[in-house]
Image 1: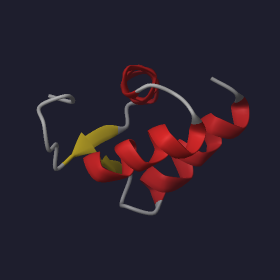
Image 2: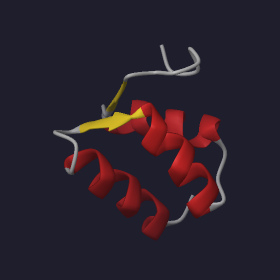
Image 3: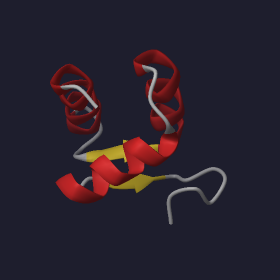
Length: 59
């Protein structure tokens, strides 16, 4: 994952009180061309919580 992709995820989480909404993760996946797994792993590394999980992908 590139620095720009990571920056976008951090910014999106910051805009939502430091937590990344699940719907935003799906949107970012398409927009950034990365997998949900990559987003989840990055969020775990950065201690960014996923909120309002829709499918149980992010427990």
